[in-house]
Image (cartoon, rainbow, N blue to C red; front, side, top):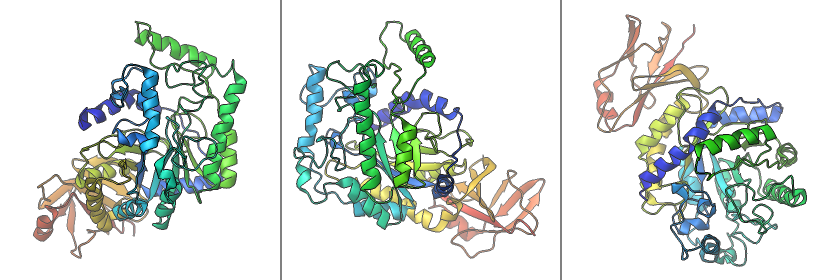
Length: 489
């Protein structure tokens, strides 16, 4: 499958659920420490997401190929056995015996992220397949387990190493953690076959089995909250693991049947209560002010929402973050094509102008490295951010957000006009727009230039006159920023 096709399939598969998510109501936080931290997080604007695990050796979509759902993007195309589902799962889980990322270098990742202007990192401590990238005592299916050759490496607890390296560069740290665990026998109980992504039994009929899983989940998360230094964000995936009222189950079940007239249902609706309120309370006792992202689950434990692989058309009435693939897929893809620096900068500006954050995903390789193209991409972003970051950090939207190729952001003292330029394009001699008209005493400058920018308002439009020297320089730039100051007497 080509990388572009993979990205398209992921976008199509998530479009409907994400569109629905963006219409959900939002329950504001009441904890003062969390409110303070959430406000600070909204000012960070730019973060890094990393999906990494033994699956990187096959270059496949993380976890999903062991899920018995019939979607093209999670087909079982790798491994040594194709004739039987359970043989495939065995081959997949056997990847831990060859996972040995000897070139693991989190300091280089952290340095590149910092120079690019990223302010926080979210790392996959455990994805849906249940493989733990941290030293948990509650399962042997982990990178520090004796069957994994990397367990002998002094840096085998990669989660701790990553969090330490990024903290030392001043970035916030966040733990991605999958609520479902397809390896744990109390989630996919061997007594029954797995049917889909959900628990494969009814928790109401087997409460002791379900309680075993709830305790396992709480215990693992509390390990992360107590043994890995300061954690700023708990980023929970697997929104189907949530309590569901019976009427909602019936409603969604009937809808699914209508969509699949042959009778095959790709995803059931099962009530799965892991007691989030209790879990979050315990976690915040260890990590005061902890931000919690219970993705796609309506309730007070979703401090911000996470549109996936898409940018909302306008602002959203709550804190949000678009998580976007930088190249290949969420997990490592061989010969991945990465965004250009220009594309990342344009994406970041488009999101920030609407009040969101960008969480950019870069997936490490089986060897524990990033592709050099990823470093090159971030290097270009960093060069631009070093000069122009004031139009990004700690800003908020200014309607109408964009006019032609000019995006708008603002802080308490300034308005920023960000002119997006395509490859080979340069600024014209004059820009004009009606989206924002400065006060008469305002001054316009450009970050990185000492030149005073002349402007005037004519026929209800702002006219900005660009010196010829700046026009020439702009030809090599992804965007040029105009800073409007002294808006008030």
